[in-house]
Image (cartoon, rainbow, N blue to C red; front, side, top):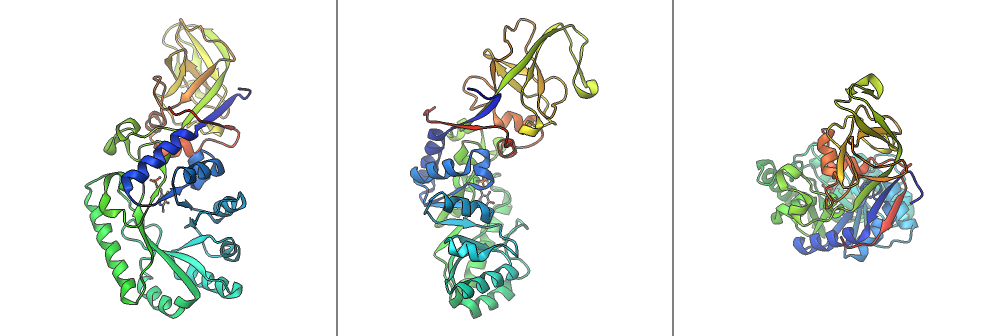
Length: 374
Ligand SMILES: *Cc1c(COP(=O)(O)O)cnc(C)c1O
């Protein structure tokens, strides 16, 4: 290892998770690889997901979809965050399926289809209660417009997204499911029956078979992380293998006396004589500045953060008897099998979630791909 920090991505762990999710869903899987595959690296992750049996790829942005195509991937790709003014000509040319969430977007896609004399493939997104993406107030007007333009586009899918699937049994889930059926019926009444109905994210894939339909869209669980540790259990409880291990080098080690203030604002003071280590990573690399009660794993034990996280570095308390030296590697987080902190721990420590911890690892941190089954 030649860097001062690196994120190791265990591709075998991702393959294991995809295969497991596919088996439990009993439907095809759309591997959600938006946001640089949740910080794990778009292209290598997309390829391993396809090799492990995912038939579809899902991304938010058109740029992400185009990067996938340019890397030679031929699997169907859905891009669902395509605001007005997106490059729909390019999207259609690259055979990228498009999420349609408003009349304005639909009209731009129809215009691009006509210009190219090639039908766009669309998935109609409906807002079933999350009040984020998809048709809500425009629905009836859209149905009319769709009837008029149906020959100009290919209607591949109907989809929606759950707000609270990570709280199995929560009544809002049943309400959203009901609304999804109603909106599906609305389409049928104008003679439209999309091939693919999809509603499940990772949480619903794991916890709610009634919403699997024709395809499930799995993100976080493919990376080996629980959609909600509190309501659904840990990775281990769910049989998932966390795929990212974040390592950093110790830049300096220093012995200090009790009562020594540490870091900006001197927000922490040592409580006894101890050994501190400066870790060569900071909030510019995705270490949350708000993190309390997290730390690193050094020489087989946890060393807690002391003081504020800086832009490029943070300080941990190794304990008086530590023999760690500058240049040693520590684990910031990993699967937890050795006793190291996990992405779940860092999420909790910063009043956030594992999704945000892995996704925000910064571009200065190189990714290294490994293939070890555990
Ligand atoms: C991000 C996203 C997913 C994946 O969600 P996970 O909770 O990570 O499984 C699925 N569908 C849509 C529309 C998304 O935006």
